[in-house]
Image 1 (spheres, helix red, strand yellow):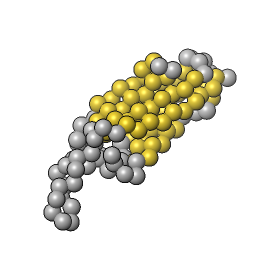
Image 2 (tube, rainbow, N blue to C red):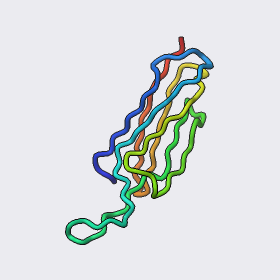
Image 3 (tube, rainbow, N blue to C red):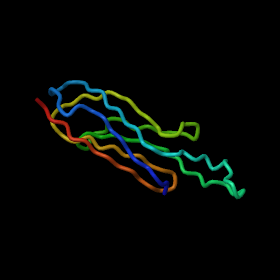
Image 4 (cartoon, helix red, strand yellow):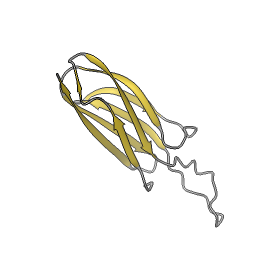
Length: 109
């Protein structure tokens, strides 16, 4: 499991039913390729976020597959329609088996 991993998600607290909102996510992650060598000459183990998903109340919003060429601290910005009040769930999957999650509630005005 990677150390120091922290997710950040930004979206409006409220929206109108049917409104399209912008969602921004960032996860602090080193994205080690497994090809770098540390000071004692051993390879730094591979640790890459390989998948990111977002759902709204169980309905898929986005599902992204990442590859080793993705930079440190992957950032995503996407748009989603808000059908009703509910919770957006965000999940980042690490190749080392770790899963990082976050969720944000949105109210409908």
